[in-house]
Length: 173
Image (cartoon, rainbow, N blue to C red; front, side, top):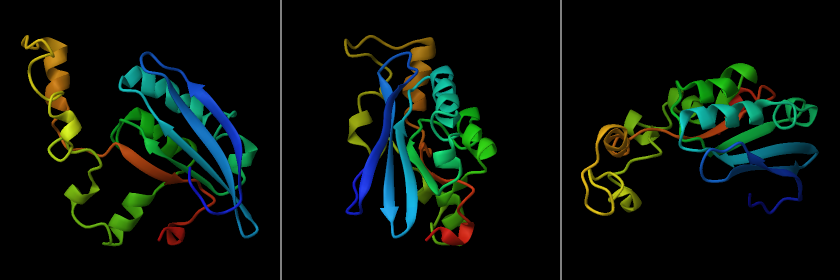
């Protein structure tokens, strides 16, 4: 989390993970006389893993703590999940979170639906191999592995910036 404003590290921590290690960082930034809480994360690739990670972040040690719930709080990151997923709905329902992109889109600022995608394998050269129906040895993928490769080619939105209920839609630029 980069800022030129006075800030302090509040917490870093590992999130429950089934594969790659995942974590979150929480920083408090002094904006004039306001203590802005900013939490950033990167969730895992598996649905069950992401749901556990969402529950952990929504809990009292993170976003559910008075330091977050009583102050303006920003939650941002790569959640590897779409808006209607249970993981994202955990934040939308638990904290009444504002989805900043939806707010600006509703105002006509964010453009077309396609401009709302944050993952598009056609534009991301890192996924050229991952979206092929073969593995690194050239063996054809089958079943779940093939579905995963095909799903990687579908543009979607997986990155979010949420604001807690202390904010109003008018606060979103």
